[in-house]
Length: 268
Image (cartoon, rainbow, N blue to C red):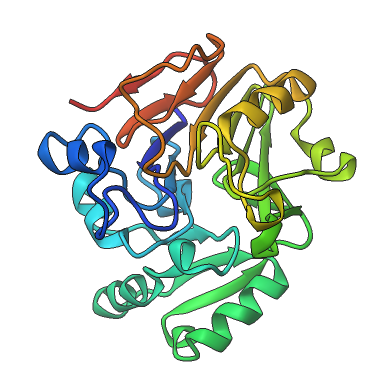
């Protein structure tokens, strides 16, 4: 069975934020319900072949996320954009490739690959860089990438994954999407969408990710079968339901979602 696992559901700073003593950061330290590592997901085809398993994004929590799931290696990555919270774990992944004597496969749009190579010029010794500007096949999925508005932070990419009878998309870092950017998000069975705040009060021009209020308005237009919110800051308390529609779930670390039904399961 194809399965999606949320390895992390936090924003760029994670939760708790080192400097913060707010109620949610304090709870995250004491009991951990709101403890969130940087956003990443694992897609597992359920077989023994390495090609059937891949991750989306590889942030600075990569090593501990692997340990959390009892994983020794993932050979393939998709990267949404070259911000630190999405690529900060690449040197550790490359080191794992080196020790295992394998070459990892990193898929991303051409301009994202160029930025990564500029920041980490040695990575090419341990991984192959493969472009997603044209649609690719990965783990039995047809994968389509497109650029989306990331507000004050520039741009990111979203991924739509299709196979016979099922379609889903990963759009962790986006805001103020234009009609052409929304189009690939139509007709989905499942959408993973970034929502950093419940209701962000900062000046709109300084913002970079939808809040939950705006996301719910967007979903009225997109009409996915089910949506999981991720990329959440210390403004979000997962103990609250915020009166969300029943087709919306606040993703939790370790949550597993079969890619083919709307049934979900959470690790103990």
